[in-house]
Amino acid sequence: MAVSTSVKTIREAWFQLNGVMCLYKPTQISWKQMRNTLAFNISRDINELEQDAPRKYVKIESLTDGTNVDLPAPASYSVTTIPNLADHELVRGPAILADDLRLQPGNLLGFRTAGVVVVGLNKGNRSLHNLNLSRPTSAYHIKSQFGLATDSHWDDGKVWEKTTFIHISRDKLDRMLASIQASNQKKMFEYCGVDPQSQTAYELASKGLLRPAVNGPPLIYGIKCVHFNPPDFTLEIHCANENEQYMAALIHDLGLSLKTTAVCQQIRCIRYGCFTVDDALLRKHWSLEYLPDHMSHCHTKLRSLPDIGPQLATYDRLQPSQNPPTKS
Image (cartoon, rainbow, N blue to C red; front, side, top):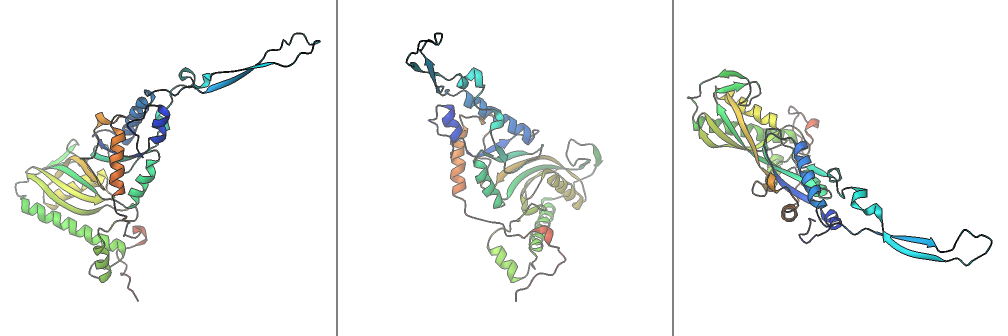
């Protein structure tokens, strides 16, 4: 449940600040920097809310003069209530610290990658864990350039080679991308331990996307060219278990397959599961002013998702050379 916009005090904000957020990660920052910025903004905004009144301290004092012990006197006490100084802001310090917030990423993007990052806050990490159990796929836009080869497979690396690319056409590129997609689809059934031409493979495919049950090798579900203007081109990739190094190496291998070279210029995550760039909050909106309504929106999207689980078996227990199992 996200924070209500009617929350006025720190105590109310803290007990209701739980949910899932979809944020837009800029490039050239790590998850640690992103987490620190988000935690600092939230803790700063919460501490600016109205402070709770200090608890009352009951003070009991004796009114009997204790100097004359020879004359007994009836006990007499006064009971007063005073503010408890332990709750004073100057004594206890800030009510909420950045380390008090439990922030967990659903999908980790690389240092150079920008785009959608789904983050769980406090009890919202449970919903994020359930989302990750369904093994959602991700979509990326990768801007690349033909004609260069570098040591890091990025355009700002040390140039190793320059090649020609005049022989590359849109049709040749599309055929190569279709071959990559077909080979990855075949790998999905190999990880399941079934023959792609068998009835078991058909039944698995009829249930929807074959999702990996564990974090294993990257799988590409779809790849196509959305922009082609040599030497520049942009690919759209739908995949799972991916990482930044894999996609940069994929562009390099694509260039070699087309008898040229290619480097990666930009990687942008446009979707993770049901969350897209249209749902993501920009860095200037990472504050308590925008997060409550945003978490409510994300909670609604998560509740509308169907219950989907992974279909692929554990890949490290399978060998592609094994014969597919048969049913008796």
